[in-house]
Length: 164
Image (cartoon, rainbow, N blue to C red):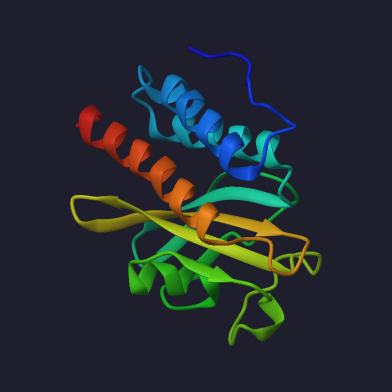
């Protein structure tokens, strides 16, 4: 298991994501527990990029329920189709919001959040949860973030499938 992250801090965002991918793979490759893998993944992303908030919500019955995260306290439950997380869950696709003040129905867990990206996690074709990342900057996320965060979620999905 990797105990320390080895991410070049002077590289561009894509270089740091490429380094992070191999680190996440090492963190989750032998661990079967989903919560442990989500916790380490949230911490790795948070430490690598210094985003305002990085965390997961898991589908439990008819809501997304707060799971491992890094950052300030967060909303505990989110309904399907509500806010950015609930919208990504309902749409079954990644949602990038350049300015949360412009997103109809945005749930303001923290007023310092200015932009957001939410990537769904799948199991057996269904959304089992979402990766939610907030930035304190407007336009904090782009297609590079989407591509690499979707790859990170795929690593987690594959690990869930392998754990059975």
